[in-house]
Length: 121
Image (cartoon, rainbow, N blue to C red; front, side, top):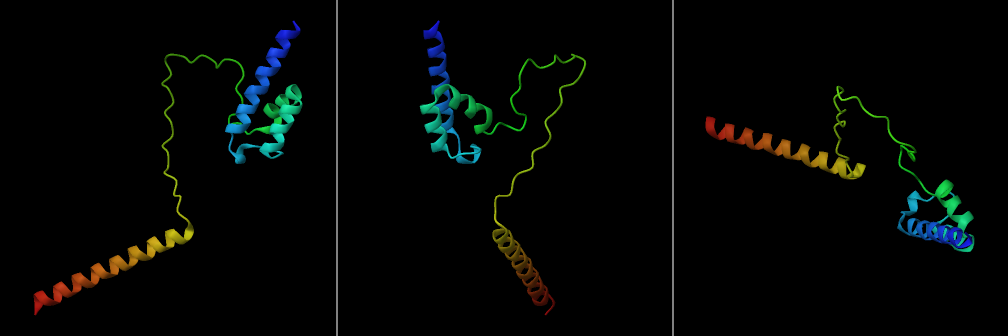
């Protein structure tokens, strides 16, 4: 029985270490990743439980326990809301793009005006 508990703690520790290493720094809470690694290595059971309890960020929905409620067949499946493309440009880049568009429109208007003047002359 002691071997089984030891294997479970070892498996939990390995899983926690892999999870800590693969996580981005922005998804780690309360302490730096290095400190979490040391905690899990030095105190495998407690460190792993703390890591999964308070150390990592979970998706918005959190951990879902249990089975989802069954859907009725008469209900249509909800469609996903349309995704809006994220603009990753900085404000300065956006302003520069707007300035270029304004200048392009001004030049097009000037070209159209010159063509019109040549046609009337």
